[in-house]
Length: 405
Image: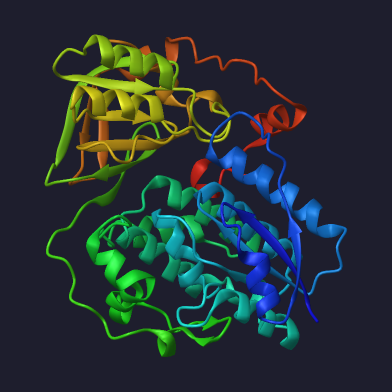
């Protein structure tokens, strides 16, 4: 009887399903507390703790399930390190949930518990074989088509790095902008057609890769009719002179963003300003939220809630993760980040910034000499355990996965 480790965050019936499939479940829990920071820090912690939990067990396979992207990405990284036969049971309603299907780790037709027991008995395939450049391209396209934003790209980059796939950041810069979203996790279309329908809709752009139960295209249903409306698209912009880069998530037909900067040092500070009211033409700039500054790539959740309450569609620029559900143009992952000496940390209230979405360029009215003369951003000292401080000192850039350096 194969021993199947169960790594789950939010799904409780997996052990019973494994027993029913003829396996011996080995529940593996995570501690309730975790480091305070952003999604990439949480992912790294989940991966490390999950690996430690598995190390003391004599396992033949793993069954994974998680609702939050950072938890699922951490489990996938752990699985790549252990390279045991692994299957992912679907859970959650985020764009990242389609990633295991696209990587071949979630069966589209078979039961996940039955699949992991069968895979453990046969000895494979293993995640090191399934997670490669072609399946990662599938995951990237599928996640973008499902309205995935910057967080999807950060976690996929970390998975690619763990799998030893070179050149994935360059793949992102090519494939993400050419794959606009045509549905989202909460739509009726996706509820009806699911991951299989979405993957089938990718047509000839989908690679026919191996999965835990066979070949991907053999498991796909007939492609359903696509919805009529495109929800969003991703655009990379850069500053030619300064070498900076940012990722814009655009809803609608906007071709330019321009405004007068108002700089905030945290999500909380920006949210309070929205509650009090911002002048028309203001471009909120939230610094200190990137991999090292967050630490761990912070989501601007409080800012999003303030925008929702005020019924606003504000543009926002940050070196962390802009609020994905807000309307308008959201500019995330400004690189280099403020805590690494990036230009975003030199911006001041009153600076004028213009972002040309058609050309992929950003420009400021501040002269280069004036920017260089300004005092750089000074990140606060990381709080919490030594794990957090070590991460903040060494974290890689966001599109390199924002993992430990």
